[in-house]
Image (tube, rainbow, N blue to C red; front, side, top):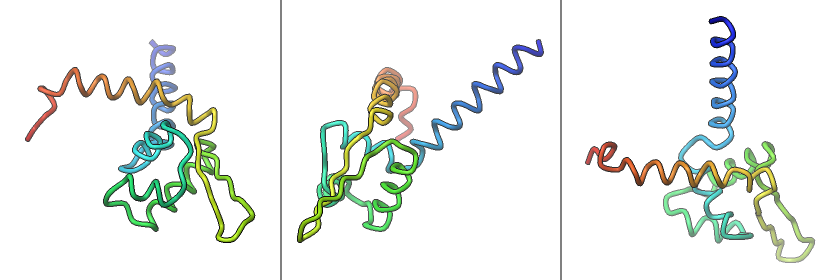
Length: 113
């Protein structure tokens, strides 16, 4: 019984860590956009209606700190910055696809509108 409780605690902690990395309203949507390829800041902002410049900047910084995205700055005028998924960020794709499939399969039960 004690081992089972320890396994549950480790699983819960690991799930919490994953949610901390991809949680919130915007991070999964940003990852979705970057799954299609490299994007510049303006492209990301246009593809995410409702996100403010401040919020997008904050989310990108957090994901860069977590090693999910790569920020490439080109030394030119005007400045050019591109964002892409790191291998760690790309490893989230199966998780996001599984979340999508779960929602599709259970839409009737979870749609409260």
